[in-house]
Image 1: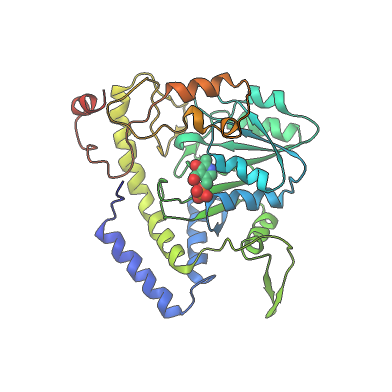
Image 2: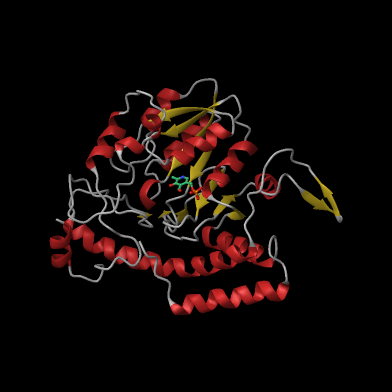
Length: 342
Ligand SMILES: Cc1ncc(COP(=O)(O)O)c(C=O)c1O
């Protein structure tokens, strides 16, 4: 898949690279700060850049100290969500999803909480916010559970004007090559908790901090999860380009809505970023991969047999017509698209 990149944005990127050379700083410089500030303005949440989405999740989970505790994760997610919790020393407990949004089910979550449960990760699957996010948040507050949001699919997603990452203690974004805001590699932690973000700044740099010109190690963990100035420059450009990509995807989704009656239908107040377009049907002539197929679901990767009927159903019954930016047939009419897809 070739990712289109317009001349106008190439020029902006090269101009920012020139700023990197002028400043003579290749890491932890003003472009990183600028990218973080711009992402904070966009999401209305404070932001710290990190090397990728998995590291963003790991940083949050290590800060919350889930070691030896249970973390509830939907089975219908990318394996990275589960691996991050395992790497942070937690026992992962898999929950089922809902058919209507493919995201964590409150009903399933309620059944899995034990005295050892410390945190819950909700994953905004496919580019929309989990439909039950408000009630999941309330449930977690009542039960003293820490809510984390995996926002890897949710660039540009809004629910009642709030963006992904607004409900939990923190959210983890990925800018991997195939994401709606692709940087090749990259990630962002968003939060309103300044202690957590301060901790992420140290965690991404071997736990290090420079205090009055002296190197100190206030956090005795972490690794190299830094983002270079060149990558931050690219992030600034991709963030500026994101509304254009979202508009393009939303226009195509409107056409698909005329073709697919049985699809994920959004509640009032929801705007998807359309990482994927999700239709409930058996086959398409032209499609991209499913969000997650049955064999991609985390419990199956682990070889566990758990009764998760809704995850089984969505894994077997959805398809994704192409909605990646630049798809060659996007300008076709609804009628033409219908015959390309069905
Ligand atoms: C749901 C989900 N969580 C986490 C990740 C990990 O992000 P990254 O590949 O940037 O580490 C991804 C994607 O790759 C993802 O789809």
